[in-house]
Image (cartoon, rainbow, N blue to C red; front, side, top):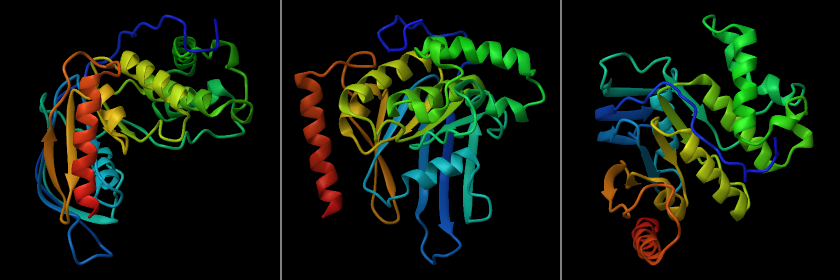
Length: 263
């Protein structure tokens, strides 16, 4: 198996996504008297990518952590969070952060299988078989015994992507996972993620309008204080989209909107 990303990648059969709806949500951190957002409404369509843009501090990551159930007692929130199949969201979310969060004392394979250690429904053997299959899909089949320190930044993020895929959750939350990579590697990983996460319900937080335009079936702008959410026009064509004059026009329009929010 080649270790680059030029190998033809096909999506693996996985658990399909579900639509998620957040209604009339208010979130306030315990350390603040002012809510981060109030009466916020958001729908993540089933099996599609939703991309949220907005300046730093507007509440994007906090929203992601709310959906992932990671706020604990840091904040108080009110509202309704539901899935289209009427099942709880809890336990059905995979989270991919900006940092790869690989443990340096574990091999690539062991890092990918880390979450399965805490899942009694998955045997260690079946998890390793599946992990090897996923690592082949992301072009790292020859590196399963390597340690993270020997990998490039792009390779480390592919390991993190494989780890996310192994969880096989219907909802995938991504917090700027490609922002620290060079332009070519970022472009390749965008394409790879779009292929392997096909039919999942994905929410991507990004500062890059170009990335949102390449990947988003739905593009949203979060702005203001308390923050509000507005939908932006989406280019034609199926994601991942190639760069074009239409994308350039959309990108300029988004940058103009963002500049207004920065003041």
